[in-house]
Image 1 (cartoon, rainbow, N blue to C red):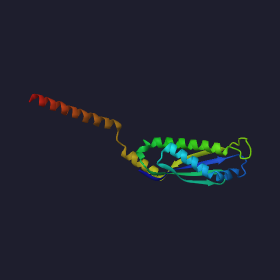
Image 2 (image 1 turned 45 degrees about the vertical axis):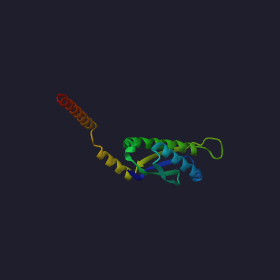
Image 3 (image 1 turned 120 degrees about the horizontal axis):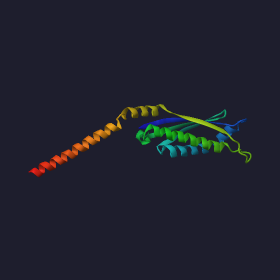
Image 4 (image 1 turned 180 degrees about the vertical axis):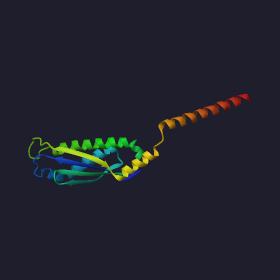
Length: 169
């Protein structure tokens, strides 16, 4: 099980010659940003994940997004690699949303292009869960197949011997 913070996403929104409008826009649209981000988290990671916090910092606009899990089964990720792919997709989707939201000029119909960059990093709980998962999943799939084949053949041999003995009586 994974509880608490699992990852942080940092998005940077910049515009050439910005005079502070981006930060003002981000503060005005904070509720909408929160809703869009929550929606994308649930779509890409599942219902057991949620937006823990959204912080907007001045400068350009920096969005710090903390994602938490309320008791997600780590096996539900179907491997850590799948979680990584989902997080990368989530970051890409959030970057596209930020381009769409901040790329509009509030005072005219002209597009006002912005640059959006971002990345994510797993939190300590996620790294610990991955470590536990990799330590407990050292079972070689080939070894499991061998055990299955031996056990199934032994069962079939037992049934065959039982039929022979029963037939001889």
